[in-house]
Length: 439
Image 1: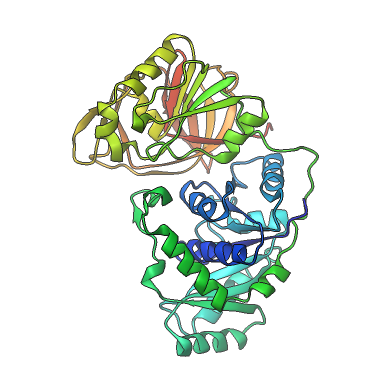
Image 2: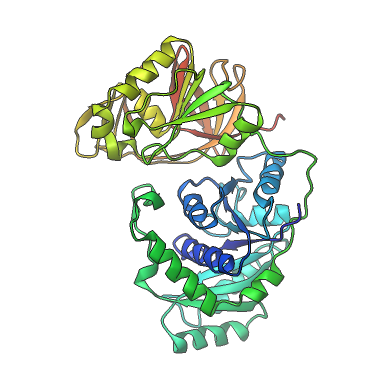
């Protein structure tokens, strides 16, 4: 593992680190560097923006949900052929599980990676110094190697901020970025709008790279990055066992939330992946012995999905011939009988599970999950344990039949049964991330 690495983090969510990350990736690629990326924690949208610039998958590294061997294997996988590996933290540097685990700081300490701290200065003056100073003292094993000041009002504001910081600590300020409406990324109820849906994304990315190239000391940043202090004897990571030998995977803007680590792990285990688009009314490949419907936004395309006949007939045929059909979050909703959109309109879905879900009366469910399978299957024997996360607004209006799993939150508090399994068709709102370490 030779690629030097560095993690971008911030005091809180919404500090502008995603745009800073995109600008850095673009500016460094303009220098002719092969730059790879990763995202800390459970997230599907930020990595999709990374990949739009780098042209390579951006992997998720989650120190709460993943075994150490999985983390190291993914780090090795991400750094292959790269001159530099940049990671984007989640939320704030110290935000994670209630017991303080799973934070961006945890991952930085575990892998001995330096942190570039992105600070939103739109409403800050001299107060920037004690704010940053608190994080500098937070954990001795977390090294904040430099600062990037964001949303700065202009030269005078920048001078005030820099003077305040230099009077209190020696951590180097690598640059500052101005407030600029052209750097805003649109969002919706689950986060950013997907890059495939933004017609002006290329112009925004070019502008971000322009600003970073002009205003950030990239030479200093490259000197601060260093290789992780870990080694691995295994090539690649296989967090989730393959659902079959030939796996049909739904892939379009309605079903886009599949972790690259999961899909590449299946390939590494010898499985063949056969992609299809329910939104284009494509059925899964009839050769498939398993079908995977990942999460996404089926509620935004419910009318189109409800009008499609071939994808639903194809799922039914797969289930009838004994293929394992599995859905997570949005994919789970699509396996049900009916999906009610935010306007209260009901749309028919695949009808393979006795399930009705609705967005008409949102019920947010967000957090890491401990998962114990209720029955044996391709994912493992009965009581096999996983870690994952839940992030959705939909609620179940009706769910009949045996549960898919028992769940608990990050504190270990029981949350009860989740999902549904009828024969060889199963799913739940939980996105599985990795098998749990046996204790």
